[in-house]
Length: 273
Picture 1 (cartoon, rainbow, N blue to C red):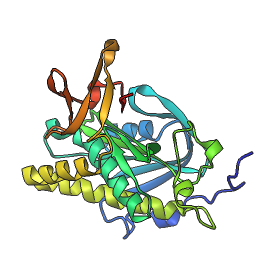
Picture 2: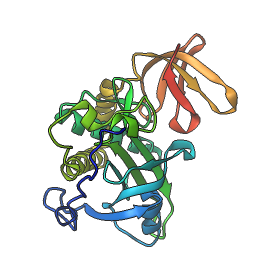
Picture 3: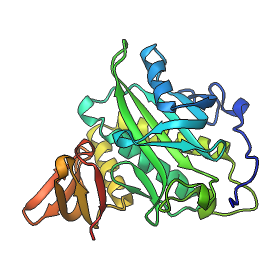
Picture 4: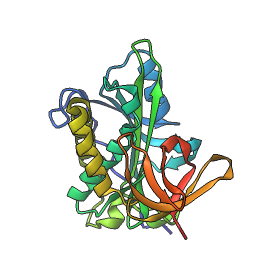
């Protein structure tokens, strides 16, 4: 039997609607009660001209998508499932950093709450190797030019038996309290951290990218471990993850020398053995 509360509070829509002072003038949040995918909703809105900074939160998601079209369901009111529309001016070659900087920002926001979180390259946030959040970034072609839709799924109040796999966790499991975490507060904190990281990346140029590269590597639980990388076609790569290069690729030191792999080139990255 689940330990989850029978009724979870809904998000505070008035606090989130429009351009709230907590989120800054560049972020506008919309809350949808039920939808297959926040990612698909924002992609459609991007194609019809929605501006940079639009956020759509889905309270109950029935067909969420992750990397490689993996799907999952989100219990109503238990987590935060949302997508953010961005229209970067940075060169397209730098866009692979978007899921990485997002994961790093989520990690920072969770650490402020006392969660010992870290990023797993390329798109997960972990606590002691248990997944608490996942990131998905996609390019969308629009009449106004290419845009990026960044989706975040964060487990907030799920009990252990509500999680999709035994290797997952939630904010309330990591920082238990007398009441479930306030999802509205958590959403504001995460969005603020993501927007701050994104704006710094956009404005920072090469020096800003180097700072992000260093900060990400320091927070990355993959770097410094021996890993097994599963590649398309059944090929595997095993070696020591030694860093992340300027393009956001994972650097793996193998017996045949160093190799850089991009997120689009991998099926899984797991600790070796």
